[in-house]
Amino acid sequence: MRRNLFLVLMLFISAVASAQIRWNAKVGINASNFTSDLKGDAKLGLKVGGGLDYAFDKTWSLQPSLLITSKGAKDSDDGTDATINAVYLELPIMVAAHVEISDKANLLVNAGPYFAYGIAGKTTEKADGVEVSVDTFGDKLPFRRFDAGLGVGVGLDFGQFVIALESEFGMVDVVKDVSSKNANISLSVTYKF
Image 1 (cartoon, rainbow, N blue to C red):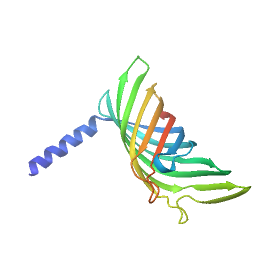
Image 2: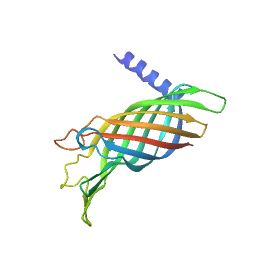
Image 3: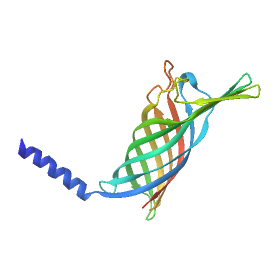
Image 4: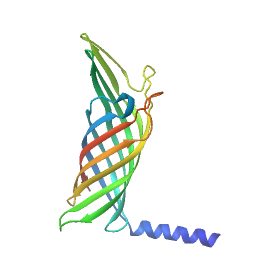
């Protein structure tokens, strides 16, 4: 048993030692909405954060990040305008494939799970000139703080910069007693250190 444990530990240390780590900073713009029962119009938001690219070889890498991202939706119905702003602390863990397309550029394709926790947000409703705002994750609204789902993306890697189109598909109902999941598409720029 000790011999097997030692062998697994040595393989892990070897994999870590041979991997290359590059830190990065990311900024992007989101278009978000809900699927199912709460579907409205897309709402624009931002995402900002950082992460790392843990390269196993020239093709494969692991890309965990920590982001602050704004999601939600907006809707207009019978003279009432509503906007749901939900700000999440998000941890995507993507597996990426880098495909060389020229000496100076790689095609980047990635996919993996994301986990998010609601940290802030305001939901605003405006009707007949009267505007009411409440905390999105407060006691007055049925929004859940936890979100998780699947992210996919494609981008161009130009050495220190990556321009990517990414999408997230929520798998958790974010509103109590309603079938409604987050859906998000974003355009981002990443700078690698």
